[in-house]
Length: 287
Image 1 (cartoon, rainbow, N blue to C red):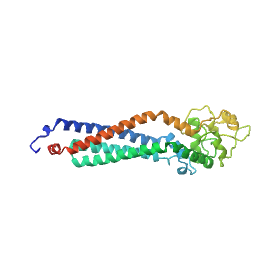
Image 2: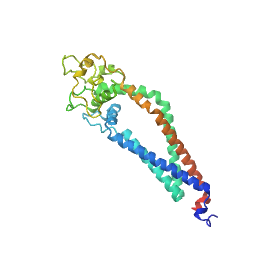
Image 3: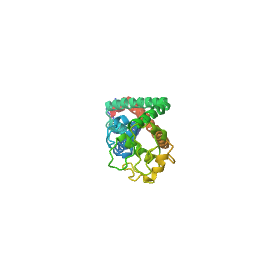
């Protein structure tokens, strides 16, 4: 029996396992805090709120310039960060205090998370090619249904989906979902040109170079420099906003994969070490 052994007589391998689990869970806590901070930033960041109205027009089709409705992605990040914090705290308590039931709970939760992550990766790989085919028609339909034109000044009230398209096009230097032709179907856009000559607009002003500093909170008030482009579509951006967003996300793809692999390896090792620690009943009696 181990009852006669003091705490200091615990095997070196056992102490090393406990140390590793504590270190792994400290990593979980750090990653959880980072993900939580990113989620909060996404909730508050005007750029993410604007893109959210573009990608989720059905949630923000009311006539308002507020983008607060797009929170699903940010809330998901906050939830993930919270779960990672909970796992880290649970693992550290189980290792430091030696509570066996905490190791059981920790291993079960971590195992379920690993299974869910593997399932998400499989679903992503299976439907990656279908995503474009399903997303672009929705974006084009949003333009046809909600786009009403670029506001001439910041006091003009337009629906948030329309305003979001203008912000996205102005800042990302793109036009429409796949190109300028998407605005041909914009049935609620009057195409009124407030500047001389009084020719109707073929593309929005934000599809043209405006020579103003990028901003996700305020559009340029003077759009006269883009009249020729907007009425003739000459020099208008030809790249669609969907492809522009994909190219931006692609620049962070490798970093996301590296972080995902590191987190996955830490999760698997933490699960294995937690199970090993749980099975060492004699050492638990020592604790």
